[in-house]
Length: 341
Image (cartoon, rainbow, N blue to C red; front, side, top):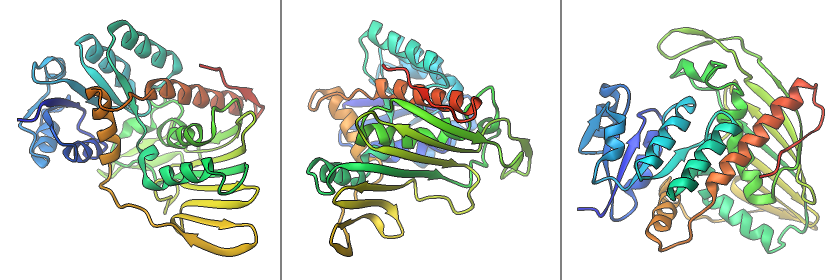
């Protein structure tokens, strides 16, 4: 039997990513899928050969064969579930966004510190091979000093749940649900965001869900932000949850004094061009199973065979940027400082 047991809390669409990733890690077994809706828990558990499913979430967390908990439930449940899992003595991998507000993030971090349990936030895009390769190229000076960056996060938007469009659950809309991916990549590759100038809007007031229901959109579906990284590059970030084609996870263009890097564009997953050489180079990348690198690193950290990350603090940092975007938008794009962690 596998020596490391996992309880997965939440049976929505992102559960598949985590279950696939965990299935690639040797010595790990998902013992139970828990959800408020028992039928959904059973459906997801059956799809991935998980032996148990339940709607008793506290009991799933406290099972003696569970070492850690992965939380993939809606945003407004993250704080309560993460704190319950930490107090139950379990390490936690919490789906992004960490929580709807920075205050909630701080409360989760306080309980992690109090209990001594490990807390990580799932930033899946960090672990894409093209991101890792770009980070190495930048560190090696392959494109010189990075001067500007453009990143775009865009999808047609979620049509499988009305909670995405509710202000009381996802007040920041596309910025919280989709933009946090880009915010984290900026911090991961280029440094901490010091200030923000942003605009947000709701361009589509009514949305039809896949089950035929019409819902009113109460939060932003479009946003544009400009980030100041201090001594780093100027960053332009576009976010949309109403784009018909959308981006392939994200699109990033990195411009340096001696070259350019494009990630996940029409030129492929990673392409580069250098001053004086107009031709583009397409970089060969390992085609690893989606989610394997992230979940392997998380488990290795818990087992002590690799350093633990600080993605919990990064979860707080991302929410502070989200809140700065909203404050700037309320002030017609005025520059707003981001509170330091």
